[in-house]
Length: 240
Image (cartoon, rainbow, N blue to C red; front, side, top):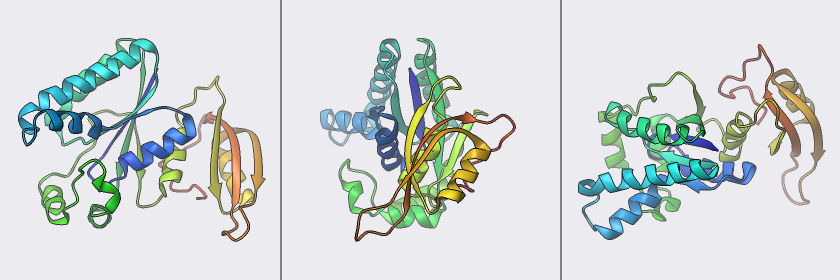
């Protein structure tokens, strides 16, 4: 079982990227608002007072998935050290049953977060949409990284959701397992050069977009883990 644990501040694109990633690798999405909305429905206006139930539900679901070998993409807002014990229990629940964890941190400049927070798409799960409240939260809380060394970081202000998802997707395969990946880039030569330097590329096909749309080459890759000695970084040099 693989747990892709995506975290970041509000409006960093966690659910959007998670859904794009699910399209690429086929894992179901267990996003943080599923349990929040459930508990809010049981205890209207008393979510904070009953957050222990939110945490218990999340831990139970992830532990169950680990026992059954069901890989999951999970999203989370990490507020700081006060969340460390909850996160540790969540990860331990997965690894105790033989699961593997990939930690993914999404981030973006504050002005980008403030611009996104009022998007209509955020109404679906009763997400925060008030710019002033978010500005206050960002001023009080820097939304730090988790206290782990092996974290994959993506600046979502530099990548479209599909591009950010592709960056995460290429880290989920094992050295012995091919993983299909479909993404877009501006040029075959540029993309091939970059991927060949960083990944073992088994196949590289190109097809043009539909008539009437912007013509961009669409690449279909089967790729493996990064080559030894290569530095994929945070994807800043990717061709999309």
